[in-house]
Length: 124
Image (cartoon, helix red, strand yellow):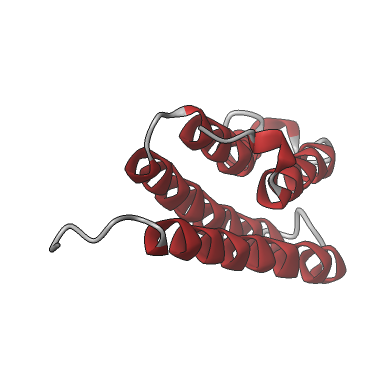
């Protein structure tokens, strides 16, 4: 339906995922199947769901996958706050990455609203 690679939200989601993978390389080994895995999966879920939604044949499908991506962005934020609380990441690192997560979530919301506004009104 849409070429996801041209979307800024996909590009930023992909960049954020790469940053999360880099960040979690320094996490304790005992977190490999815990918080490390959760952070990586939730971050990757954002661009993956954007891509999958764009590959579907309808705007309602795209909206559904954008909703999932928004949920994954919220999950990522919560996990980063946990990592900060556990002192796996510094307050400085958290203050650099958390605003990017919030901005990505706002971009997803705006894109969702744009797609939804262009849907034909079912009450006609």
